[in-house]
Length: 288
Image 1 (cartoon, rainbow, N blue to C red):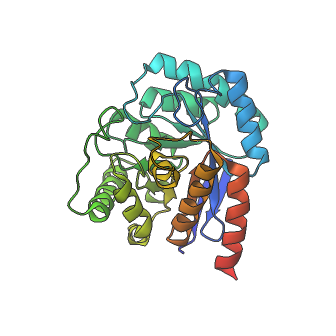
Image 2 (tube, rainbow, N blue to C red; image 1 turned 120 degrees about the vertical axis):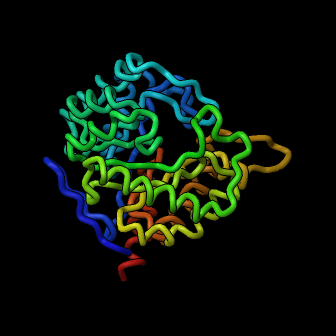
């Protein structure tokens, strides 16, 4: 696995020799994964602290649900949700905080509040000003592939070759970002598991993740608690099972292990403690 060393003011991440874990904090009332348990600032801050203590390398704060068919929220609402949480956690944690947003104004406010990574599921497409915000800040930027929007992405997504098409999209996105002032060494790509893909598409992306290594930037993968895992581990005739069931967590860990073996440098998860144990053992095996 290629090693990358990301340095930016106040932080450094060495990726490749050790898999990094991004812990998820959803400051939303309609999160698919936790049912809005961390919607209030106090609950979200406490969850962020728990994830850091469990071994997270990055805390990812989001104030707008990106689950399938989710409704968008206004910039004002999103800022009100995330900024108090970022301010509190930035004052308490040494690890970097990521802002999960598609909005330039939210990203700028989050960076001012103490965040130092931008995580954009739209790959700089939904708000063209976000590219300028990222270029000025010169912080790491995560760009993700998504077919459509959260509101329509799961309405019969079709590809001729999902791996080739997602890879080409991310290659073009890297070029677009660099042309607009974002340094290549600050970019991280995410194939967007579950974002405009069928279950089979997700499995193919995980199986062939090594094909993304030639893009020359770190790879982040997020499969945690997603529907395709729940569909695999549920017992028929169940239509769905709760995302926080133990068997879903076991499925998540299996998918994360496959992603790491196939080239992922960062994994984005809800359960950091279980992931930390898996990652430590897997990294030890990889590097033996």
